[in-house]
Image (cartoon, rainbow, N blue to C red):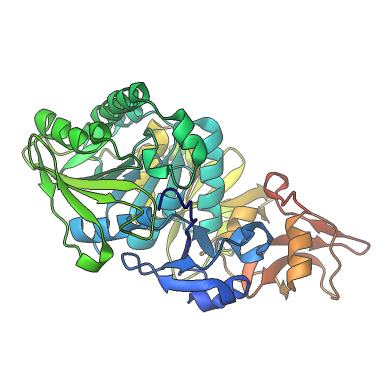
Length: 436
């Protein structure tokens, strides 16, 4: 299988934006079978040029490798996803696992999606923004910074940087970069990352560890290292035989781990294991009431922002520089604690900026799942949608004036402003499609 180099392509749909994979016209003839361990994941028959599908840019689906989508099954088998949880995705860029986690947890749960590398944190922010959920905070921090939030998280996912041997079939460069020395360096780094973040996990909380490596030093040996250093128990998953996933036991402590081999599963090389922190391991963290006084908008500003929100849900507001952030009310204190301890790239939904008590709406607001229908919308065809996404001048037949939402297949792509003599395209410059 490695020698044939056959490429598998898979996507996961965003159920908050589309009901079914059939709602993506661009992929209609290309949909293969459903991924057995992920209810929203599908194989494609061949790899299309996703860049020319407007719904890809709208966050209607995410292109993600099938093996790594097993994370959904791992969460469902180790946590009660109906409970309100604080979840950390520690090594989150480009955003596949975070968007998956957000789809599994409920809306009263908070996801902190972190990436230490600045440029990758920007890509993560873009992908989380397109996904549209309000219960996510994106941070740009090192693992050790999470020591400031002891026992805060119910679930921590560490998809650790690794030597990448599981990607040999998919990425020939991974073969050239691989070495025994690199495996050893990766193993040491994985231990450091886990040691730095462990105190942030609540007693009784779940740690899910994964890599895209085949090396025991980065997989089962890390499970043994965790058992040697921390009061944890290992979680065994229930698997269906036809899935082809291989259950392994670590050499020292017989910890269960799960390996995905491309000759046995329809996916790339992957390893995953889960652990529960023993309840007597540390004292539980008492949440301090955060100081919010400097970050609250005026009543007039909050009122201006409220008009733009789905009225069925309750939100609190923060003033961040000149922007108004909408935070689900039940998560407000938790988000404030994160804001006061970490470097924030995004929190909740950035509604836009307030000028003279009027909200100037943001692109993030129009892509969100909490936006109210305050502006008229124009449904455009694929050609106009792509021109819009390239940030070109677009022509639409309408008598409307002012802010208008551009939609494709009923899903928001962004905003335009129609003036008497021209139309201004407000699609973000950094996100525009560059290819012809």
